Image (cartoon, rainbow, N blue to C red; front, side, top):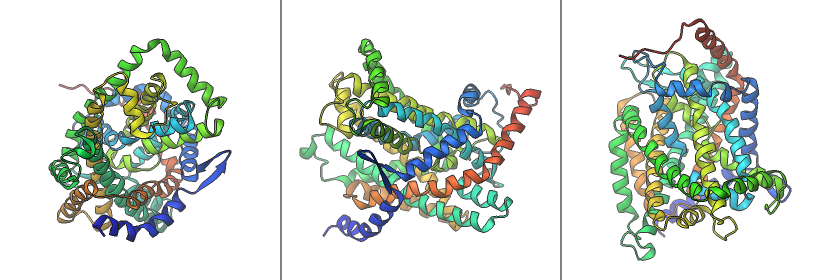
Length: 481
């Protein structure tokens, strides 16, 4: 029995229990609705209403902040608004945008795209809430470094509400789940899937690399290690270049296909709307389209999970609310733009009715226009995987230091272990390991959403103070020399 079989055999019973609890579903029509998805979408709706559709009212201001119009280099923090956004995006933009969307529309039909977009727009309010709290309750250290995220605002925010014990308990639970998610879904799964795509374009089963996942893993681990050893500043310097590059390659190719078939764009949107409300040709009808769309949005942009607030907490600012504004762009880019592009290409190219699903469906749709696209897709998958790994290494590291303390030796141990799991992920058959790690990621949403409900009055107070300063002119665009 190989090492991967032994690990899967050991973890399988635990994995099955946790997966069944976290992804417990209730039957709706001909399909089932995971309660964790409802937990995230309902919360996103609550925050949208509570903050008066903040994602639309301050969208333009968010773009100004990302451009650096209000940036003061003397503010506490380690990275710029743009770098923080790029780092968080690198953790969410990935295989879910390529393969996950294909699964959603192949099961729920074109109409799933409408509900995916709606959930993405609502999720912008969740990101706004959690990332504002991440900066507000972060720890700032004498050497200029910072630590933030749900574990900190749960502990410190709940203490202000005279619920210190509950807050600490929720913070620890979040941190443990975050480490599990970082090592599994944010690392091993990414290494595994990028290796599989690499093998596919180098000859498949006949490829020289077919049985050399360990070699691919070592190379990937070395590259990841070089980046993450340098901490968040090093990670941000890489992601601010990789994320725009990935977006240009993938979205650019999608736009070319859409423009080549511009006469079908109206028809494609007609399919999306009719499928969303009439359920024509949709497995499970309207409910099936809604569930698949909501699932993909929740699984893709991770709004409400809390992970992104860890990256956003490192931003240079003295106004916590500014990073809340910046972060609301994340679900918009990830879900409303990139996921929608994928869905449109699949619909326009006529591949939706095929027997394909997942990354094979997306690849086939793009390949119908560009015969060489599988090679581009392989590069995109590897880049998506790499950027996701370096971002999740930071999430896992901050959860780790929250539990064991801010110690350089302990940080190095985590980074080395993280790199080791890159090699294991590329060379193993993961099975229950991935089910377990996915459950860990979505388990993070349980304490996080509870915290957001309890602490959202703090966010509203920050919003009122900031808007007053904007109106009075106390906050104005910073003049850069």
